[in-house]
Amino acid sequence: MKKTEEAIEAARKKGYGKIDEILLVSGSTRMPQAKKALTQKFSESKSKW
Image (cartoon, rainbow, N blue to C red):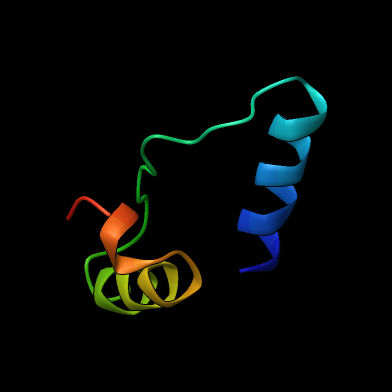
């Protein structure tokens, strides 16, 4: 999650205040864990899976 947080912070510094979507890029065996971690980090209501 550290890289995700760094990317969000970099986007905010560039003037982006809202994130509409997150593109998951990972191996198929890691995708469920990535999805779960992002869903827990960001509220379920904001996620589009």
